[in-house]
Image (cartoon, rainbow, N blue to C red; front, top):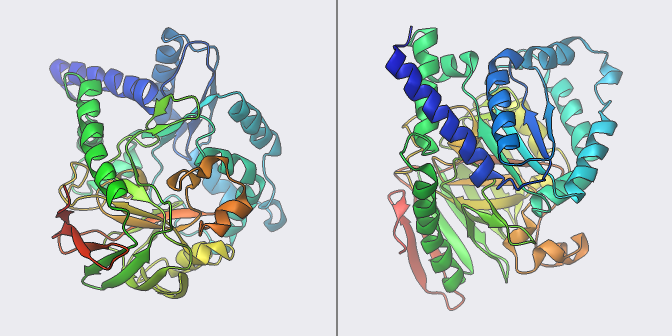
Length: 420
């Protein structure tokens, strides 16, 4: 049992963490609606954080707080036992309501904390049916989300199953405490003034985004064990990092934590071979040893040492899922990097350089947030019903930027920034 002092410290950190998600993550405003989404995790474990966020949101002046619950065990039961033909049914009423709230500028905050092995033993085909049905029905909402038409952010809640996966040698209580400590440290919630710490951090990220946007590289060249890859960047591409500004110039931070500086590749401009350096937890299925070969931007070969069926389901989603949609730079000394995976992409993608299969962010090209899909496609922006990050960074990764004149500039050396 935790001591009174340890419990008081935990509660103070939790209050600061919740405040970060609301003040920094979605930048909640007075008289604004907030939708609180809970991922497929145990309701009883996420409920305290949902209640805390609800109280803080109303204290900040929120108009309405709408909690949306999705229990992990119930989600698993449906995946195992629902009739095959029912798996493509979606909650259209909720999706349409989300679209309406998005148009009103409602803030969306999602909490993740699922068991990394939640869907272990569920047939990949059943998982794929559900995912694709939801993706197709949510196309309009996905477009709005990736164009930052409304404030949104993602945070985490430590849960028993997730903690056991990350710290298998600790007791249940110690594992849960260790995971919370990690979350607080990774999000700077354990610091005396987390918002000040974040402002300093975001300023550091801006140094890198400014340098990359100033240099306007034509392509990036990656070298590491199992990786020899070139990524062309489209004309007018933009690098972003940390916070993003909405059309109304109200900054948000879509992921807490965030350590990445990211942009988009030219759809047909990726060539070579790339190997993952961490497992990918994808909707409760662990995919390890990912290796891709790309020619003219298209994934022509792929393999995984485990979870190969799940990897195939991602890449075979549609035509666009055979291409990449994001390139992200994260130094190996990121404070999120604990030397081993956390089995949650919110954290693992901020511990290592990564790329994403599928849809690109329109905000990563000049004027992209106001362009039509046809206009974006003409600029080399990829579209898909999916967007899945996987990690390729390590202490052995070197990256060079190549200018239009052919000059090569070191960007990463030994997994660390070489570019000021």
